[in-house]
Length: 115
Length: 113
Image (cartoon, rainbow over all chains, first blue to last red; front, top):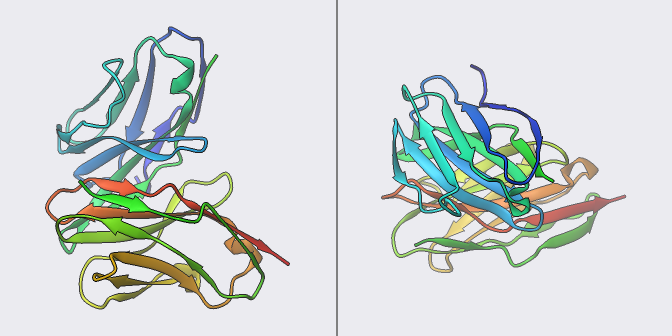
């Protein structure tokens, strides 16, 4: 597609429920990133995929968080047993290679509210 | 590991005045540097990037930044700001050998008439 597509755009859930957030990257972009943006916390790196493998998943906050990518395209971020502190905007980005660097293009984000 | 410091959390400025948003980074290896902008209720948009070559890079909307390796800085400048420049600006760094992009905490630019 023309841009990075994320769904749902808004999700309200109850504490303890599982949620899945989806990211559809720009066609042809091999790298995909997930970040979390909390109020007053800036942008927190969660995980990075190159193709279907994740060279760096060091930012996942706990074992309740997991992510996968299939077919080198769509990625899903899953949060199990959600907690109120998981409330944030989850941003996905895919990247094209320019002069050796991954240059990221971001989606609009999925706003998660845990009640 | 690389890190980014944006010392100013908020910068108020009058319309048509010049502005500089400061960014310093820390890395043991060569880096790529980026500025992203987030307008109110919108997503992140790439403003400009330094990958190689000239240390002075120009971006969209009249912004520019200069890579200073000795001072490990990548400050963002605009000679004359507009009300529409009101937004959150994020500096980010990526090691050349590992493609993890690390962001600073952001600087909110507030432009008033």
